[in-house]
Amino acid sequence: MPPPLPAEPMNQVGLWGELIAYGSGVSLSPIHIGLLFLLLLGANPLRRGGLFVLGWMVTIALMVGLLLTVGHGFLLSMEQGTSHRTGLDLLGAGALLALGLRELLPSKQGLKEPPAWSKQLDRLSSLPLPLLIGASAGLEVISPDDVFLVAKAAAALLAAGLAWRQEWILAALFTVAASLLLLLPYLAVVLNRQGILPLLERGKALLLARSDLVVGGLSLALAGYLGWQGIEGLRLS
Image 1 (cartoon, one colour):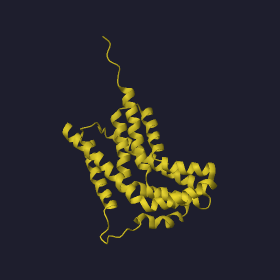
Image 2 (tube, rainbow, N blue to C red):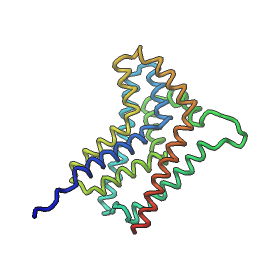
Image 3 (cartoon, rainbow, N blue to C red):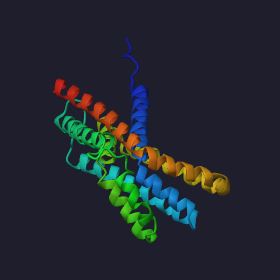
Image 4 (spheres, one colour):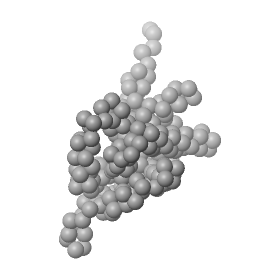
């Protein structure tokens, strides 16, 4: 009797979905979206905005590439239940829980204030472009929610046991997914700058008003997911 057909296509589809989900979470970075909006509303929008988006994509690609290289170099196993993956899940859950609570809980004074990062937007956007791209990369690599999402994407790729060509193609897919909320407004400006300017103004105002809810809600949702994954890992270990 012939063996049953392998479930690899379904696993591949699941992996694609996982990478797109993690990447979408990374792309939801209010400070980077706000900076891009300011660049697109200012002088030389296509050149400055395009280089800014390119810098973001290179940073994400380098982060996931470094994690994949380290994982292969140290022969880290990232299957569910292994100590490396369980530790990553639980550590990420704790960091994201703290970040989400900090964003959502009212301040001691009980006053509604703009997010701290919003006060830096104008100053950062006025920097020379190389410095701005460097600052953007630095903000990305110290963002706990983004770092853990990139780490989870790398862990999913390592756990899949793919050939190196497939692995890097999917890493490129993750990079595009992680850049989606920057690519879309930039491409909209390329196609119709005058028509999109009012939407960028409204988007910037909405971002400043609601970013704490977005960041806090996303962080708590991710913390719950990673915590569940970590508990499952402890159960299987």
